[in-house]
Length: 82
Image (cartoon, rainbow, N blue to C red; front, side, top):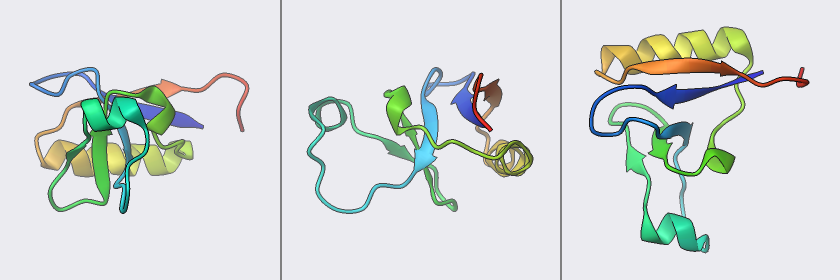
């Protein structure tokens, strides 16, 4: 399993996660909201706990799609997770 983190541009150090729909109750998210990536189902979050855990092959595919939209990311392997 792995996660993706943005490594360049104005959103550097944000984590890739699924778009959130509905009410936000997380105070950190309210204070520093996510940044949607147009044309995808993903947003950029400052909170790592909101990052999506990808199966590695899927992460590479998502990474390529994000790169097409100008979002440079790095794959972060999660130790001890299958």
